[in-house]
Length: 312
Image 1: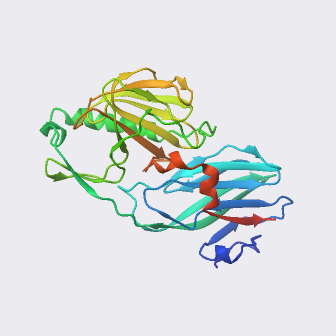
Image 2 (image 1 turned 120 degrees about the vertical axis):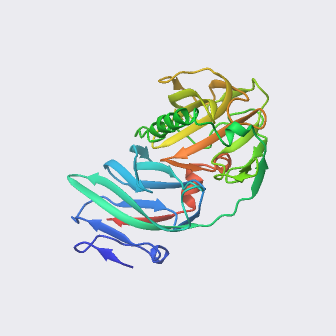
Image 3 (image 1 turned 90 degrees about the horizontal axis):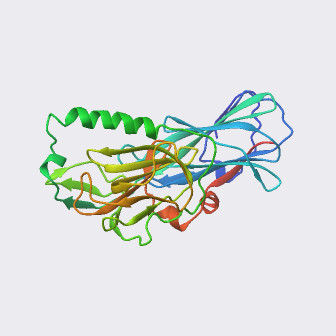
């Protein structure tokens, strides 16, 4: 194991030998601190991380895939804990080894602890879809609109608030969850290959109630070229849910929504092959498969990682 710094305070077991850590600067502390994250995970899938200590710490930040993720500090058992949900976008992230950086402050000392994660390849099937030709090859007149909407949604997806409003497992956005197109499918529109599907499509007749899976704040609504009528909800720590192809939007930007609250009616707007709900989960800029999270919790995800004591 490679370590850097002046006599870094690390006590890691054999299970941590696949990880590289750097603690800088180093200074004796009284409280123990543990970090939890997986040694390896599949591309496109959400995973959990945590910082745990038996006394106070503040300003925890995790840097992953170029994004700084701010976490809040909560009471956890006899100490303090910070939870995070992260992942990797099947469209942009390749299998391989990637750094993950944990930062937090104890007393007057700021600690920086670096580890490595392995992202494993995951195969997804292809699907052929027939849509209006303008949705595959938009006219020159439509290009400025598409570019502007891409910039607006990009700003929304960079939203980062520290207060955790999400809980797991999330609530179901539809009363009946029938998948018509899975996350990760390599899509071929009118014979032309396009980027893999970054969400899950759920069968829903026009007018079906759409509910918020997490509590949060509405950060964007609109009627976009590809997405149609859409909603973006921020639930803290980089957790953002998106809902596309709606027929009605029942909330507005700035509204606070509760878990299970009616926020929209499904529809057939934007680039569609038929009425459905496009449900997406974005974690700190990474669109991941949203479906596995309905069957687990952040606690269970953390059990699949390695807990390592880094300060004592």
